[in-house]
Each structure stands twice: as C-alpha cells, then as structure tokens.
Picture 1: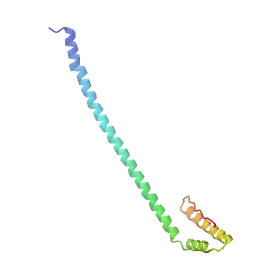
Picture 2: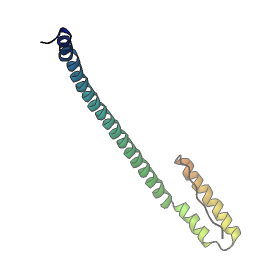
Picture 3: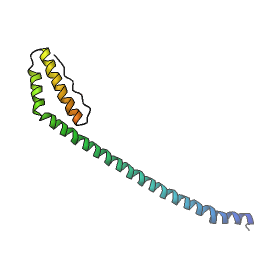
Picture 4: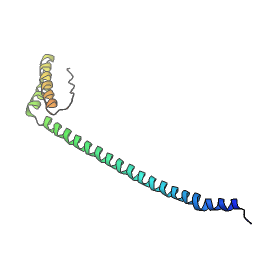
Length: 119
C-alpha cells in the first residue's frame, strides 16, 4: 500500500517535473539551433564583405599600377633617372619622379611611398 506522500510525489514528478524537463530540453535545443544558424549567417556575411573589400582594393591597386606603368611622363622621368651620370643629376630626376608620384598618390587618394636609392 502506497502512502499519500508517495502518491503526491509520483504525481508531482509525472505532472510537473517531467513535462518541465522535456519542455526545457526542447527549448534549449531550439535555442541552440537558432543561435548556430544566426552565428553561421553572420560569419558568412562577414566573409563575403571581406572578400568584396579585398576584390575592390585589388582592382583599385591594379588600376593604379596600370596608370603608373603606362604614364609616358613617368616613364621618361624613370629613364632619365636611370641614365643620369652623376649624383646631382640623379637627385634632380629623383625629385621630379617624387613630385610626379606624389601627384598620382594624391589624385588617387592613396598613401604611397617610393624609395629611390641614390648611388
């Protein structure tokens, strides 16, 4: 014969505790799956944004390099620097090259540095 307290305990377990446990497990699984999905979407969006920024920066750098390479005046200045015979003449060509490159970098809104070794 079961006592009244055992019946109440069993009823409490079957009617309150067990359903609460099942609902808690189901809700936690749903929450975790939604959380994983959100994190996955944010990670994917971040990766796509980074890839797009890298692509745009690469295209911009390629355009600047092409503009520098195909500029006739810049090539003339580089040839003059390469053919200079003394340090004074090289310095004059280097200053002219520097001014031309500064104008390119200013126009393209970039920070650039070109190091010319006088030798």
